[in-house]
Length: 114
Length: 114
Image (tube, rainbow over all chains, first blue to last red; front, top):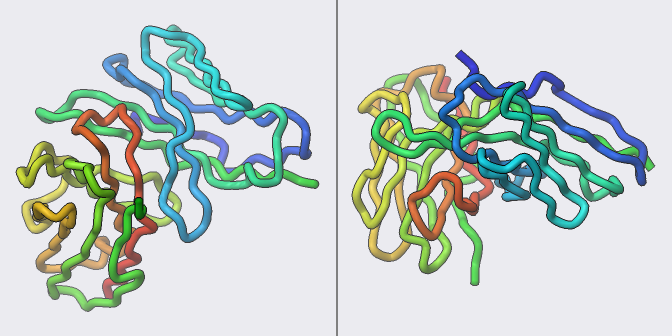
Protein backbone atom coordinates (compact mmCIF):
# COMPACT_ATOMS: atom_id res chain seq x y z
CA UNK A 1 0.00 0.00 0.00
CA UNK A 2 1.83 3.07 -1.30
CA UNK A 3 0.88 6.00 0.87
CA UNK A 4 3.07 8.45 -1.09
CA UNK A 5 3.08 8.21 -4.88
CA UNK A 6 5.17 9.89 -7.51
CA UNK A 7 3.55 8.74 -10.71
CA UNK A 8 6.13 10.15 -13.14
CA UNK A 9 9.35 8.10 -13.12
CA UNK A 10 11.05 10.79 -15.22
CA UNK A 11 10.63 14.32 -16.50
CA UNK A 12 12.58 16.22 -19.14
CA UNK A 13 12.59 20.04 -19.11
CA UNK A 14 14.40 22.68 -21.14
CA UNK A 15 16.95 24.77 -19.26
CA UNK A 16 15.41 28.05 -18.12
CA UNK A 17 11.85 26.73 -18.13
CA UNK A 18 9.74 25.65 -15.15
CA UNK A 19 10.00 22.11 -13.76
CA UNK A 20 6.93 20.77 -11.97
CA UNK A 21 7.25 17.57 -9.97
CA UNK A 22 4.11 16.00 -8.56
CA UNK A 23 3.31 13.85 -5.55
CA UNK A 24 0.05 12.32 -4.31
CA UNK A 25 -0.66 10.88 -0.88
CA UNK A 26 -3.43 8.90 0.77
CA UNK A 27 -2.92 9.39 4.53
CA UNK A 28 -4.70 12.43 6.00
CA UNK A 29 -2.56 12.17 9.14
CA UNK A 30 0.64 13.33 7.43
CA UNK A 31 1.75 16.52 9.17
CA UNK A 32 4.76 17.57 7.10
CA UNK A 33 5.85 17.02 3.53
CA UNK A 34 9.45 17.19 2.40
CA UNK A 35 11.35 17.13 -0.86
CA UNK A 36 14.80 15.60 -1.11
CA UNK A 37 17.13 15.63 -4.11
CA UNK A 38 19.55 12.82 -4.91
CA UNK A 39 22.54 12.80 -7.22
CA UNK A 40 24.10 9.46 -8.33
CA UNK A 41 26.39 7.88 -5.73
CA UNK A 42 25.35 10.43 -3.11
CA UNK A 43 22.78 10.37 -0.34
CA UNK A 44 19.58 12.41 -0.59
CA UNK A 45 19.85 16.08 0.40
CA UNK A 46 17.03 18.08 1.90
CA UNK A 47 15.49 20.68 -0.40
CA UNK A 48 12.33 22.17 1.07
CA UNK A 49 9.42 21.23 3.34
CA UNK A 50 5.88 22.34 4.06
CA UNK A 51 3.62 21.93 7.06
CA UNK A 52 0.18 20.46 6.47
CA UNK A 53 -1.36 23.70 7.77
CA UNK A 54 0.21 25.72 4.96
CA UNK A 55 -0.52 25.67 1.25
CA UNK A 56 2.70 27.18 -0.08
CA UNK A 57 6.34 27.48 0.90
CA UNK A 58 9.00 29.21 -1.14
CA UNK A 59 12.80 29.12 -0.98
CA UNK A 60 14.61 30.85 -3.80
CA UNK A 61 13.92 29.00 -7.05
CA UNK A 62 11.97 26.27 -5.27
CA UNK A 63 8.30 26.48 -4.31
CA UNK A 64 6.17 23.69 -2.87
CA UNK A 65 2.38 23.82 -3.16
CA UNK A 66 0.07 21.69 -1.03
CA UNK A 67 -3.54 20.93 -1.96
CA UNK A 68 -4.99 19.08 1.02
CA UNK A 69 -8.41 18.48 -0.48
CA UNK A 70 -6.81 16.73 -3.45
CA UNK A 71 -4.08 15.14 -1.30
CA UNK A 72 -1.57 16.46 -3.77
CA UNK A 73 1.63 18.45 -3.59
CA UNK A 74 3.95 19.77 -6.23
CA UNK A 75 7.47 21.17 -6.38
CA UNK A 76 8.11 24.01 -8.82
CA UNK A 77 11.64 24.88 -9.89
CA UNK A 78 11.99 28.21 -11.72
CA UNK A 79 14.14 28.67 -13.71
CA UNK A 80 15.47 25.15 -14.19
CA UNK A 81 19.25 24.82 -14.31
CA UNK A 82 21.51 21.95 -15.47
CA UNK A 83 22.55 21.30 -11.86
CA UNK A 84 18.92 20.51 -11.03
CA UNK A 85 19.21 17.23 -12.95
CA UNK A 86 18.73 14.64 -10.20
CA UNK A 87 16.19 12.27 -8.69
CA UNK A 88 13.61 14.08 -6.55
CA UNK A 89 11.87 12.30 -3.70
CA UNK A 90 8.67 13.41 -2.02
CA UNK A 91 8.40 12.29 1.61
CA UNK A 92 5.71 12.66 4.24
CA UNK A 93 5.98 12.64 8.01
CA UNK A 94 3.48 10.93 10.29
CA UNK A 95 3.31 9.46 13.76
CA UNK A 96 2.76 5.73 13.26
CA UNK A 97 3.76 2.54 15.06
CA UNK A 98 4.70 4.62 18.13
CA UNK A 99 7.15 6.88 16.37
CA UNK A 100 7.53 9.57 13.75
CA UNK A 101 8.40 8.14 10.36
CA UNK A 102 9.13 9.46 6.94
CA UNK A 103 7.21 7.70 4.15
CA UNK A 104 8.88 8.19 0.76
CA UNK A 105 7.70 8.14 -2.81
CA UNK A 106 9.61 6.22 -5.49
CA UNK A 107 11.19 9.37 -6.92
CA UNK A 108 11.10 11.28 -10.20
CA UNK A 109 14.22 11.64 -12.31
CA UNK A 110 14.47 15.21 -13.58
CA UNK A 111 16.57 15.83 -16.68
CA UNK A 112 17.34 19.43 -17.63
CA UNK A 113 18.16 19.75 -21.32
CA UNK A 114 20.56 22.53 -22.43
CA UNK B 1 32.50 19.80 9.91
CA UNK B 2 32.54 16.48 8.04
CA UNK B 3 29.42 14.98 6.51
CA UNK B 4 27.85 11.62 7.14
CA UNK B 5 30.02 8.73 6.04
CA UNK B 6 29.20 5.04 5.57
CA UNK B 7 31.30 1.92 5.17
CA UNK B 8 31.75 -0.20 3.24
CA UNK B 9 30.62 1.25 -0.08
CA UNK B 10 29.75 -2.13 -1.54
CA UNK B 11 29.33 -5.55 -0.02
CA UNK B 12 28.52 -9.01 -1.36
CA UNK B 13 27.18 -11.70 0.97
CA UNK B 14 25.49 -15.06 0.57
CA UNK B 15 22.08 -16.05 1.84
CA UNK B 16 22.07 -16.93 5.56
CA UNK B 17 25.12 -14.86 6.42
CA UNK B 18 25.24 -11.90 8.78
CA UNK B 19 26.36 -8.37 7.89
CA UNK B 20 27.31 -5.21 9.78
CA UNK B 21 27.09 -1.81 8.11
CA UNK B 22 28.64 1.27 9.67
CA UNK B 23 27.77 4.95 9.75
CA UNK B 24 29.50 7.99 11.15
CA UNK B 25 27.09 10.85 11.89
CA UNK B 26 27.77 14.55 11.84
CA UNK B 27 29.26 15.77 15.08
CA UNK B 28 26.57 16.94 17.49
CA UNK B 29 23.77 14.94 15.85
CA UNK B 30 22.24 12.69 18.51
CA UNK B 31 19.80 10.95 16.18
CA UNK B 32 20.52 8.43 13.45
CA UNK B 33 17.99 6.77 11.17
CA UNK B 34 18.54 3.83 8.85
CA UNK B 35 16.74 3.26 5.57
CA UNK B 36 16.60 0.48 3.00
CA UNK B 37 16.24 1.53 -0.64
CA UNK B 38 15.42 -1.21 -3.12
CA UNK B 39 16.05 -0.61 -6.81
CA UNK B 40 13.51 1.79 -8.32
CA UNK B 41 11.89 2.59 -4.97
CA UNK B 42 12.15 5.26 -2.34
CA UNK B 43 13.91 4.73 0.99
CA UNK B 44 12.02 2.66 3.57
CA UNK B 45 12.45 3.48 7.26
CA UNK B 46 14.10 0.64 9.22
CA UNK B 47 14.65 2.23 12.64
CA UNK B 48 15.90 5.27 14.47
CA UNK B 49 18.30 5.65 17.38
CA UNK B 50 18.22 8.65 19.69
CA UNK B 51 20.93 9.01 22.33
CA UNK B 52 21.92 5.35 21.97
CA UNK B 53 18.40 3.96 22.42
CA UNK B 54 16.11 2.64 19.71
CA UNK B 55 13.49 5.34 19.30
CA UNK B 56 11.25 3.92 16.62
CA UNK B 57 11.02 1.13 14.10
CA UNK B 58 9.48 0.56 10.71
CA UNK B 59 8.03 -2.65 9.35
CA UNK B 60 11.23 -4.71 9.48
CA UNK B 61 11.78 -8.04 11.30
CA UNK B 62 13.93 -8.37 14.44
CA UNK B 63 16.85 -9.79 12.42
CA UNK B 64 17.47 -6.12 11.56
CA UNK B 65 19.10 -4.59 14.62
CA UNK B 66 21.24 -1.60 15.40
CA UNK B 67 23.56 0.14 17.79
CA UNK B 68 24.46 3.77 18.34
CA UNK B 69 27.65 4.79 20.14
CA UNK B 70 28.56 7.95 22.07
CA UNK B 71 31.10 8.95 19.43
CA UNK B 72 28.33 9.59 16.81
CA UNK B 73 28.94 6.27 15.06
CA UNK B 74 26.29 3.61 14.56
CA UNK B 75 25.79 0.13 13.12
CA UNK B 76 23.09 -1.73 11.27
CA UNK B 77 23.24 -5.51 11.71
CA UNK B 78 21.29 -7.92 9.58
CA UNK B 79 21.19 -11.63 10.48
CA UNK B 80 20.15 -14.58 8.32
CA UNK B 81 20.42 -12.60 5.09
CA UNK B 82 17.77 -13.19 2.45
CA UNK B 83 17.91 -12.43 -1.27
CA UNK B 84 15.37 -9.60 -0.80
CA UNK B 85 17.78 -7.83 1.55
CA UNK B 86 19.76 -6.77 -1.53
CA UNK B 87 19.42 -2.99 -1.53
CA UNK B 88 21.11 0.34 -0.85
CA UNK B 89 21.27 1.02 2.88
CA UNK B 90 21.27 4.66 3.89
CA UNK B 91 21.93 6.22 7.24
CA UNK B 92 20.88 9.75 8.10
CA UNK B 93 21.77 11.88 11.07
CA UNK B 94 19.83 14.78 12.51
CA UNK B 95 19.84 17.13 15.47
CA UNK B 96 16.66 15.65 16.92
CA UNK B 97 14.29 12.75 16.45
CA UNK B 98 11.52 14.56 14.57
CA UNK B 99 11.19 13.06 11.10
CA UNK B 100 10.06 16.37 9.62
CA UNK B 101 13.36 18.06 10.38
CA UNK B 102 16.25 17.94 7.95
CA UNK B 103 18.17 14.70 7.88
CA UNK B 104 21.71 14.47 6.54
CA UNK B 105 22.33 11.32 4.55
CA UNK B 106 25.43 9.33 3.86
CA UNK B 107 26.14 7.97 0.36
CA UNK B 108 24.90 4.51 1.31
CA UNK B 109 26.17 0.93 1.32
CA UNK B 110 25.15 -1.25 -1.62
CA UNK B 111 24.48 -4.78 -0.29
CA UNK B 112 24.13 -7.69 -2.69
CA UNK B 113 22.92 -11.04 -1.34
CA UNK B 114 23.61 -14.05 -3.56
